[in-house]
Length: 77
Image 1 (cartoon, rainbow, N blue to C red):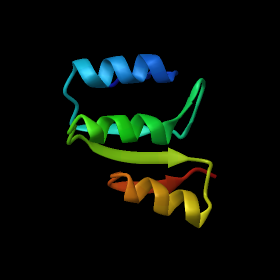
Image 2: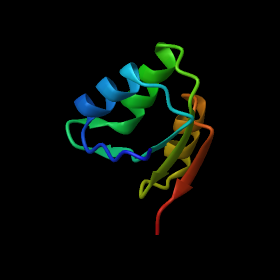
Image 3: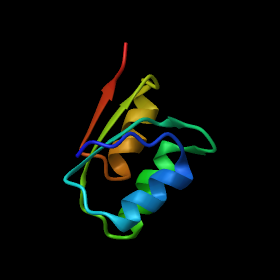
Image 4: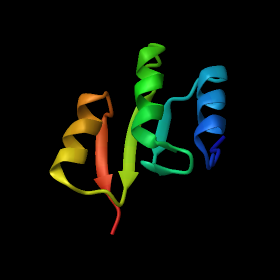
């Protein structure tokens, strides 16, 4: 069932406790950068597919997200 989680502590707790096939991740989260959530997921060997969907569209940000283990990176209009 889809869940919307709006902050980093909630996201980390849910992702650590449950198994997901797909995580759609915005990078502009309150309290912490979404890349830190992705980094923590991959550090715990979480293999869920991660789609970054964000307004941050620089090439640097995109490369960083993919290097950290995102499966794809989409820029919101």
